[in-house]
Image (cartoon, rainbow, N blue to C red; front, side):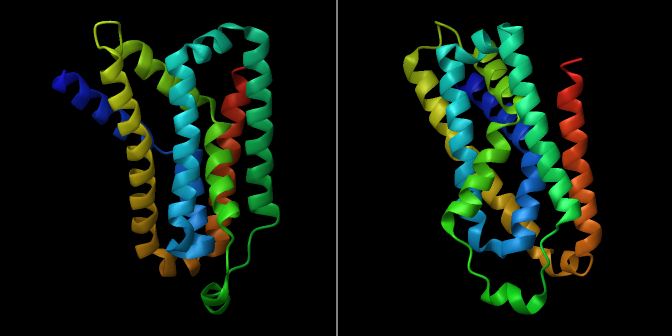
Length: 202
């Protein structure tokens, strides 16, 4: 049982830190708001992950992706949102200077919802948790094991994203010097993932 739990923890950790919209979103949030909203952004990510874990445990994710029409609709909406996010990052980037960063006040909802949205529209997150649950959990594991592992994954998602944000924050001043380059890079990466999702429909 312990061996299986450690394996789940390792797979979950690798999945969370893998480059994707969530990591780019974490970096964007740190660049714009510093470490002040890192906790809020991480909470948004954790809530989205919790929803995927719950739906995966109930088998809803597998049923959903078994329906081609629903899957394509979800892919279209996800691709459209990420494409919009990427284009806005390039076309209308947030202008940040060393002076206004210190006085900027960011509402809890902004960072929290940004973390939630960028995670909930990512099909890879839904498939990731559905795969973990279907592959590593079975009737022999028991309900208690599933509950403990699910709670672990939700808290681990929060802690990992929060730690990554704090890590990014250490290099924030240097990145601010090249903020325009970063905006183009972040926008391009998000658009790239939007295109990858849209290709799945074809």
